[in-house]
Image 1 (tube, helix red, strand yellow):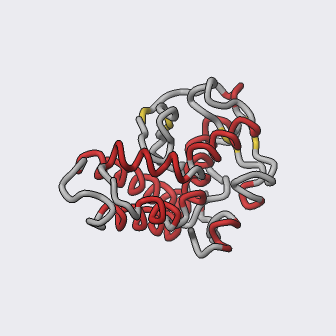
Image 2 (spheres, helix red, strand yellow):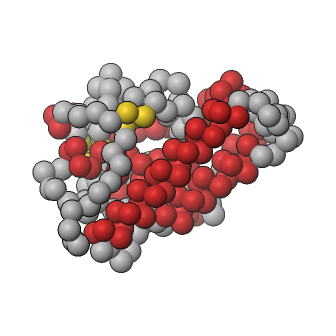
Length: 203
């Protein structure tokens, strides 16, 4: 550790409409009583074993069972994700469902986001040493969404631009945070993704 790490701590405060799609980011102090650690058997896999997780809203989930259910419904359910891309980001294209299925490293990105955003609130440690997603994987996740936004046959050009830009901005912030954390902690390795993403070339 080369001195104290300066990070941006942002938390999810609007899960109900699909965490992958609409986020309300705010700096909040969350009670450590709602923290729990992943056991390495769920959607984030063994590379995130023992990572601290916390929701800013206990009505969403308070343990791994609830987290797994939320993740599968909001991140992995391509039908729900597709509907949110249509309603929020102006993407009504006939090929939307197939495009959503081809988005890269989304599970890896969101596992990394939860790990990063939860750790300092949950852990008694004052330094950030949780497994960190590789910035290049984060960028790949962002680029796949941006590419879909820029495909006219899927997302209508000139529609919902502010919403699209805001969503891409959350990726930019996360990727920067991952990079800063790796540099400041002196970590020489990072997570290249959850097993399902890696085995399917990111999709």
